[in-house]
Every structure is written in C-alpha cells, then in structure tokens.
Image (spheres, rainbow, N blue to C red):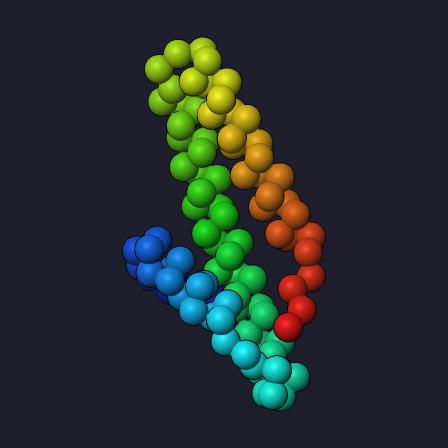
Length: 91
C-alpha cells in the first residue's frame, strides 16, 4: 500500500453501502475479484475501527457493570471481525 489518508467513517459507510448495491455480474472475473477485495477490505477496516471504539468503552466505563457490558460488546465485535477475515467474499 502507499500513503494513508483520513476520511470520515460516515463516508466509508456510504461507499460500502453504494458498492453493495452494484451489480457487477456482467463484468470480467478480474473486475469482480477486485471489487470483492475492495469491498472486503473496506468492511474489515470499518470493523477494526468499531472494535477500537468498543475497546475504548471498556477503558472509559464508569462502573463495573458498564465495563462488563462494554467487554461483552468488544468480544462480539472481535468475533465478528474474525468471522469476516475467515469468510471468502465471492461476487
């Protein structure tokens, strides 16, 4: 990869949603593979950002109950990210 850029999370979500609506079934296999790779990478990036936010909520929890709830939420996000990494996105 090259240099990194900062873009708003809301824009990443919009791009993912837009790409999810495209029908690329008539395109060449290499285009479909690139499309799948890009959509997968964006979804994983978004999940990693959400995982980081979930972890921050554990650290900043006001009490033990909130910390417990935040930890459960974090573990759910982590499992979802692991499932995304294991899935093979086919288009």
